[in-house]
Image (cartoon, rainbow, N blue to C red; front, side, top):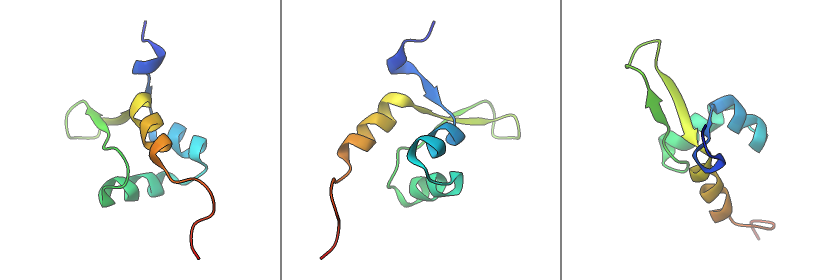
Length: 70
């Protein structure tokens, strides 16, 4: 059994959790603003992207709080 700290999340789970689109998650990854996924399988249609929940938790904890801007 997988421990909660080793739970792997699908992009749809992260998008629902953060209330953003899946394309936003992938955009953040491309821009270097979000952890890169672990690719499971070969580089074809059978491949799947998963994020360790622990990495997403750490990213979220590092985000600024409060109102941004002037």
